[in-house]
Length: 416
Ligand code: HAM
Image (cartoon, rainbow, N blue to C red; front, side, top):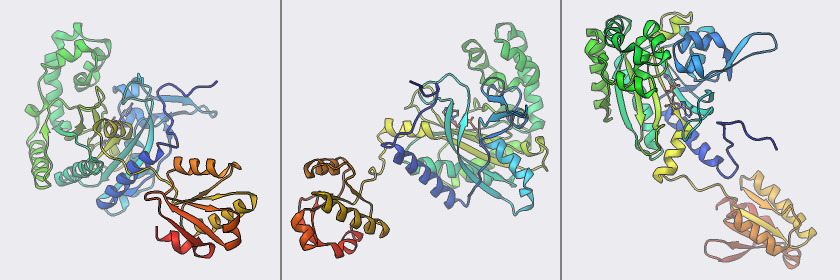
């Protein structure tokens, strides 16, 4: 017996409609906001992520599925969607197309993390990326999209926002952080000691309890924002208010990836345990240049689909009904089943989902199966019906019956 790899999950036939529902909601809201889909490969050269996502992040240092291909090139299964989109933007010269360029994707992503509820090694994201606008109303529009997506699923999650400033104010903040952490370094984990030199802001995101406790007293970025960043953050909030989107400011949000500048945000639910962040994102004005493209401001987010589905189950949000055939056509014997097969072929071509017996079951067993499939109608063809050219059709919701000539089947069921 070969088992599924740790931290991965099958989506079984009985559940896949739930995924399709969430994905369709994502596509709908993307259409409403004028985003078009972009598809990039599941793997990229490793360097894209080490440079794009950041050398000091947990994602890059600990969690990547990296391997050498047969040509000895280091490739990595994408741990997130943003870096691949940025690579494609540069490589395909999309900066030459009208701005802003609005894109979305629905992708599997891979991180070698310790699996738990809401944390997997293969998970799925709905992501949105908007390129070319540095304006605060663009941040607010992207956040509004995220908000509307979550709301369209009947879910509630708290929006928390923060600004982590630009290169300019980050320098002053990093100096302040170093001053704060320096005397406490001895009590901190080896990772944090390395982060201290390379990227002190990462220390605010450490998951080790002792480091977390120390980080709780650290200076907050909001006290170090430059005037431009302050103004930008205030304007983002103004536009959120205009769009009627409630938010809280949480100076503790720094995000786990290095490319962010200015606005960062998360939608969090307390109903699904420790992994409550169902969606995260922010502005990343430096990434495209960092990986070799022309300076291009950008803002985006990604939602974790497993976490959203978990939240839907936990909060009792409703899914649409599972798909079911309109009609199950039961045949009494071989000749009747042949007729059923013929009518089914015609019905399906007319767009009517229907089922027939493939197991040579008795009529009784066929009815039982039709019931399990939750067919809306059961049609029976017995010896008499076959002679008369009619089906005996039963409406399963009220048990009413009608005799429907074979020739009228399409007209009859197309309306149902
Ligand atoms: P992220 O915060 O690393 O951001 O991931 C976004 C979302 O993916 C998380 O909020 C969570 O719902 C889900 N997620 C992350 N890791 C896992 C996991 N191991 N298992 C299950 N779900 C997970 C990004 O990935 C950025 N690329 C978002 C972004 C786009 N920023 C700008 N544009």
